[in-house]
Image (cartoon, rainbow, N blue to C red):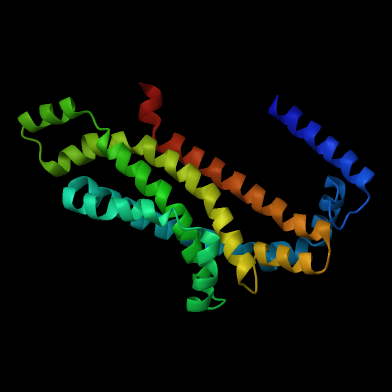
Amino acid sequence: MSIGLVLLLLIVWEIGARLYGKPFILPSPINILVRLWELRSVLFINHLPATLAVILIGLLMSLVLGIGLSIWMHESTIVRKAFFPLLIASQTIPVIALAPIFVLWFGYSIWSKVVVTVLITFFPITVNMFDGLRAADPHLKEVLQTMGATKRQIFLKVELPSALPHFYSGLKVAVTLSVIGAAIGEWLGADSGLGYFSRRMMTQFDGAGVFAPIVLLSLLGIALFLLVGLLERITMKWRNEN
């Protein structure tokens, strides 16, 4: 059903683009695919690795910071009251307004794009992990406490398994947002990457060239989402067996 809907939208797009007759503004899907094939070397060799590096480094930093902060907030009421409002406030500031500041601080290096990616992906990982830890069954925790279980054992046996489904939900959101964050960072200040290349093609009025790296960004986001789904199935077989 979904494949049929996508094909229908592509057909409508193709017809509409041909009727409009201005490929530098609205290229057709066929024109985009042709342009993607023509630019395959420069995109796959020069710019895709740069974008992928930003995404992976940003996601890794978000995972470390997000998981660490969520556990810390779960264990300490003081930390939760201090950091949770700041966490919410960080998402009220438009990232596109901060990106030029990061470029000013870090220049056109990879770190300006990584910071943008972390700022976008950090929130869903932290909040979902925190909610998952708090969703642990209190009755099961009380039973383990009466049996002499330590706080560490309760965390590993009850709280962490309870948090995993929430964590993967947040990670699925984060991996798709990471592609957006990397593209925004590259669009506003970079000398390589798919976002940078798309902006460069725009200055040359190459409509198909603008869309070609966007297609790669979309495919990259889908691939990362599917990879997280596969990792979820592998690490949570116990839930499927129940």
